[in-house]
Length: 204
Image 1 (cartoon, rainbow, N blue to C red):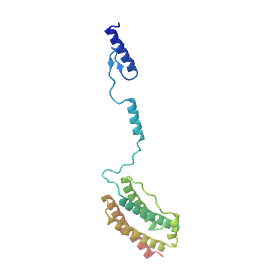
Image 2 (cartoon, rainbow, N blue to C red):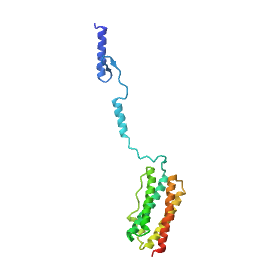
Image 3 (spheres, rainbow, N blue to C red):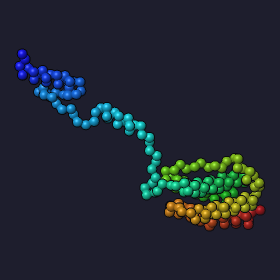
Image 4 (cartoon, rainbow, N blue to C red):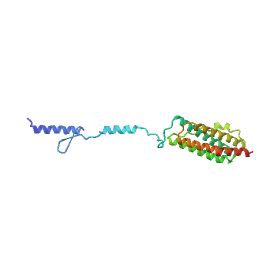
């Protein structure tokens, strides 16, 4: 009949054999060692798969800049499309009549207006819309045949631009947007409009 000692050795042998299958381990003295704590390989693999499956986050707005609501997005979009229109129209005149003033100077200023509004989109991690103006819109400028007519069209465009900003500024706008809109309106009112009016008075 096996002794108690031989029974104990046999029991330890079984435990070590089970440990080899990943349930228990044995220390160098042959005693059962507890299973290491911490996540199992399967748990780590599952966690890694979960992390890998997460989509890349969208760009975050600038610090302290609240997310834009739809009304603000609409206002920014209307403003940038109006500035796009000015760039497109003044470039058309330059192509038609040559590098004439005040179109050459004001066309560059309008590009800066576009950039100023584009930065407002960027601060809110919003995509900057493309210009919606193209060859299909040429009929509105096709009647222009002289610098005087072109400058008169410029007067009308700047008046419309000023009216747009006045209307948008009556709404509830974040401080940074209101400051940019007010600055752009001032540029149109104090610089662009007088330049075109002077052109109408002097051009033939």
